[in-house]
Image 1 (cartoon, rainbow, N blue to C red):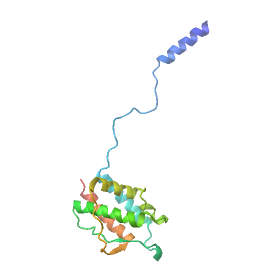
Image 2 (cartoon, helix red, strand yellow; image 1 turned 120 degrees about the vertical axis):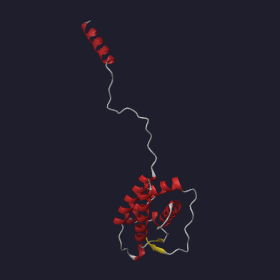
Image 3 (tube, rainbow, N blue to C red; image 1 turned 180 degrees about the vertical axis):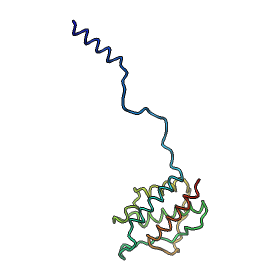
Image 4 (spheres, rainbow, N blue to C red; image 1 turned 90 degrees about the horizontal axis):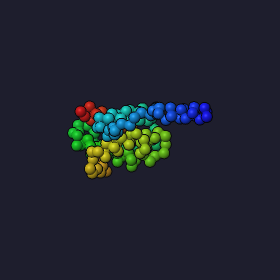
Length: 157
C-alpha cells in the first residue's frame, strides 16, 4: 500500500512540473529577401576569390574568351542589362566546363546563384549579347566585372 501511495505521489509531482526544453521559442520572422547591397557584396567577395583562384596564364587549349561587354560608365538600368548578359556569357561558355579551375562558375555555386538571384529581381527580359563584339580572356573579363560590381555596390543605398 505504501508503495502505491509513493508511486502515486511521484506521478502527480512529475505531471505537475512544467516541461522545459532547450529548443528556442518559435519566432514569426521570415528570412529577409536578399537586398541589392547584400547580393552585390557577396558578388564582390565571390569575384575576388574567383580571380585569385583563377590562373593568369592558361595553356592554349584551356583559354576561354568572352564578349568584351561595356562595363564602365553605366547607369542603373544599363548595369541590370549588363549583369544579365554577364550571366548569359558565363553560363554558355564557362559553367559547363569540368576542370577544377572553372568550379566557381558552376550554376550551383554562390557566384552564379547570386548573379542569377540579382537578375531575377531586376531583369524582365535579357537583351542578347551582340555577337560582333570583340572577345577578351576570362581573367580580364572577371577583373572588369569586379570593378563594375564594386561600383554598383557603392551606389546602392
